[in-house]
Amino acid sequence: MLLMSTAGMTEAEFRALYERLRGSIPWPPGDRRGALNYITPAEIRAAAAEVQMGRAVSLAAPVESRVTPDDPDPARHQMTGTAADAPPAGLSFATDRLEMNIHGNADSHLDALCHVMYDGHLYNGVPADMVTAHGAEELSVEVAKDGITGRGVLLDIPRLRGVRWLEPGDHVTADDLTRAAAVQQVEVRRGDLLFVRVGHRRRRAELGPWDAASARAGLHPTAMEFVADRQVAVLGSDSNNDTAGNPADKVEFPVHVLAINALGVHLLDYLAFGELAGVCEDAGRWSFLCVIAPLRLPAGTGSPVNPIAIL
Image (cartoon, rainbow, N blue to C red; front, side, top):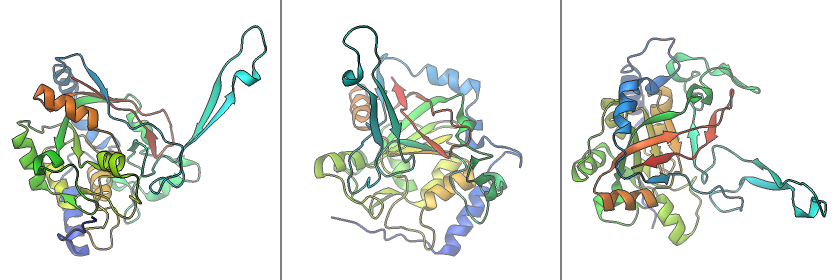
């Protein structure tokens, strides 16, 4: 069953929200780090105190190389050195190379602040023409070259609603996020890395891949007020973060526009929360230390990524 959003926004309503959120950022015009500024040494030290069990959990899905409805241009893994190339005696090496579309609908990845162009500019008024055929001259994934370390919080929306997953086309509201935090007895605070589970990965695993570009669960644009009010540093989902069908008129990826372009919040798309949700449920706690290490791509618009939650 595919659900279509009923809480639509007109273009005027979306632009009003965009301007309101864009005007809320507390940094000067020259800032290039965005919401990562919320993660101070004090926040990192406090996040380290979340480690109680010594349990590490990956939040990334395995990179796929097969063609599926949601991944028509999958990663290409090529072996460049195998046993067939090795001499019968002495040293040889197994080698390979990987080619991938960073911003697809299957592989886990981080979106840099240069990823979204809106009304001719990037985050904080940087001209869009800073992104050229040679890459991004400003706001590339290199902004996060030292990694992102902080307190992670998982809000499990299917758990809140008592379902296995949200159906494609359904959306998460600010009220959902508020209620999930209350039910899970966890507070979303300044500098947190907020992860929102919609059950996309579980549905995909049990029912098979589908055309997620056309239909998927995600956040409603107004949920970004929750993110802005709590000064969240990073936002991630097991889906694309944006709902499809689209709840905002004439803006295909409203959450991407509001998060990246207006607020300077790095997004993590298509993560995997199945194991983490189970560990959090068993432990009775939904916060943890989280470490994200994107690749050093000086002009890149994003990076494949394997975030690690440590409880």
